[in-house]
Image 1: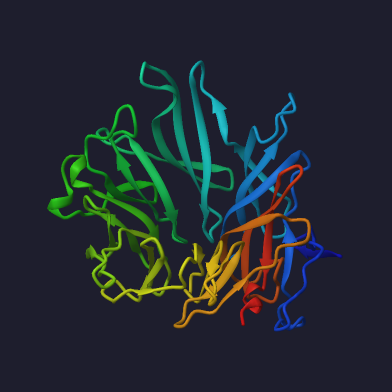
Image 2: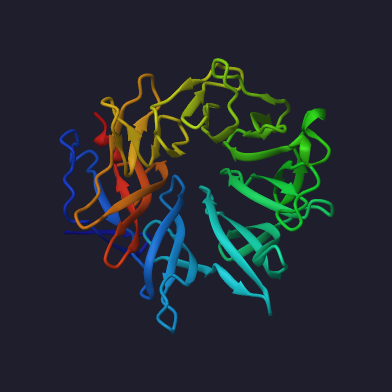
Amino acid sequence: MRIIALLSGALLLAATVPGVVAPATATAAACPAEVLELPAPSWATDTWAVAMNDEGWVVGTAVEEDAGGTRRDIRHITLWRDGEAPLDLGRQRKGLGPGKRLTREPVAVNDDGVVLIARTIWRWHTQSEYTGWLRVGSSGELWKHGTTTWLKGTGTRKFAWVTDINDDGLVVGYLTDGYMHPYPRLSTQPVVWRRGVLERLPLPPSARGDWRAGGGEAVAVNNHGLIVGEVGPGGRAGWWRLDGGNGSLRKLGEHVIHETDLVDDRGRIFGHRPGHVLWPSTQGRPRELVPGFDIAAVTADGRYVVGNGFVDRSGDRDDGPSIATTGNPMRTAQLPVPSGSDSSGAADVGRGVTAYAPQGGVTVAGSLVREAPRTYTAALWTCAQTYLP
């Protein structure tokens, strides 16, 4: 079966993957659940999804086979826009002369169509204790309709690491003065880039100074300016608001949570210890989520999370792409893996009306993996909430 949708004059062809049976709870007329492979560029041997916005745009990677027949060597950042052919945003690796190269990795795409890209400069290094490629610089890149904006660090902290972007174009991340060879000497500085302009986020005095103080890292931001990350030498879970205020998140019993991962537009924060926990607010008490649920993304409204496996009620681990509600108790379900696929993974999740799911609902972006030979294919699970019990 082939799904054909006409959107803004562009013909979208997406093949429904065989061997997938829609759940009994799905109402076909309301929201049919399907697994769809995203169309690959004609030259691509592999594709995979990294992130998706609520408009159904997906950013990821397409791999070109080089002239020598070496697979997975020439990678391109690729944008799948709703109802249009995949767009090539350039190679992910570029030579910069002898012993020097640039790599580019897609991070996220917001609802305004801005793609966030992490850039790293590498130099070939030869010393008695180490020989290989070393990071000698990092920065961020914003792509929008062919226009690029650069996100850089400062004179003392030249390494800029970008981690997330919200729908207003606010980018969060952190700065360091080194990575390895040389190792950082200064504490890590959490930052935001507002309209491309760098702003530092505040840190308590105990977290400032040299590398032993820890500093902080901003890792995620919602559409209301709530930023979450890590603060201090132990990397305790922390938060900042653009309109003022910052602090640490509460313990889970006697356990300090060291890492936050996500924040939804309701102000709820997700972290892990290593199992995932949920804070209902910056001041709220955390609770544990389903054991072993490896959360990759959350919908903006916070109702659903997706990940790559969880531990079921019998204590057995179910691997593969999964979806869950965030209520208490959580409801979990595995997403179907088509016949012929050895495994697959979920990368991001969104809600909205797209060419792939015109009825709305929850769409999950991820990748299918097939063996002999091993290949990757960017894919969508549409109306994924219908798989939940």
